[in-house]
Length: 121
Picture 1 (cartoon, rainbow, N blue to C red):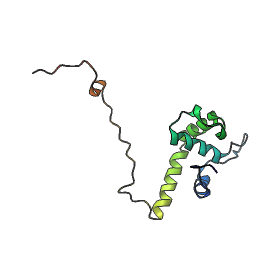
Picture 2: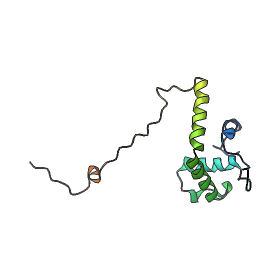
Picture 3: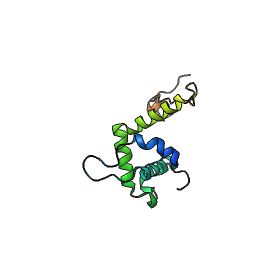
């Protein structure tokens, strides 16, 4: 196992929450654990998918699985179940552990763009 990849304990928590490795039809999917490690590498480094090291396999496979799972809600389900598990064991303090997805759009003039009205003195 490489540094900063999923441990056995982490994998045992996530694996049951993922889609089946072998779908009802078609060929089996590439190993979920390896692809999740690839996805975590990209998210951790901030590198583009194309810069994924070869040891993780083709970047297209990791990227397509990431976006497909995002579209069908796999990541949301994994996060929700992990939060429930930690909440049951009392490890989450909801007063300090939260995500805020507030988005405030500003017009281009609000960013200090040249032009616009001149202040009158």
